Image: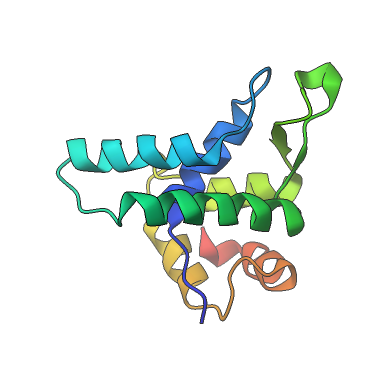
Length: 130
């Protein structure tokens, strides 16, 4: 069973969402994520490991159609992305600023691989997940 760091994925998706005009750099986002966790007094994984995982998540999100290259007319520079409809659905399910995000994360965690495209699309289509 594959487990994901939903907080880190949320951070990366927010950076994609707000990334017009600047390059997507997952390693520094992992550093910022770890710093925010430390400032809040929350535990976090080893920083080098987080940086590696962030880079792996970038590849996975791109490969599985959660993000795609940002078009030039939308601030694309060849090194940044936009959310696909699937990526937008994922962000809306795991967004910590939305009350009740724990249940969708729990449902996703119960899947063999929650980010596998068919699995995610099926789970996300169920009204009761949100």
